[in-house]
Picture (cartoon, rainbow, N blue to C red):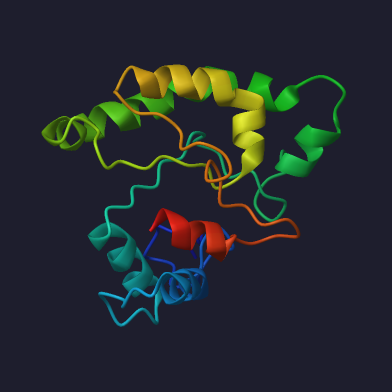
Length: 165
């Protein structure tokens, strides 16, 4: 079965990256009615698309314990910054994704585009490089505390997500 990335609709299982319930809860907190039925992964992806969300992977690797021996926990335990050493060479992958969406960004000069991280470790390890790349496209990371939607203990901070919506 294909990996269960949020945007891989060939695998109907939701990922821990972003769940249907996360979106339902955030919309409820924000007092916003869902545009879709919002009960399946397809509905979630449609809801995110209709709301203007764009999810870009900074890294082309699946770095979780279930799929690969090189994972976030392993990289974090090392004394030197192995995470940055692994990801730094892949930033061209990220730039390629931004080039692909450039026409949409150009239509409104990046206005209304809200950029935030799913996980704060990305900003910790690659924040300056990512910010520099985004600045070239007229984009910037949202100011703290809305610069990420990570919730301590796992999952998404639906209160932050509600504020972003």
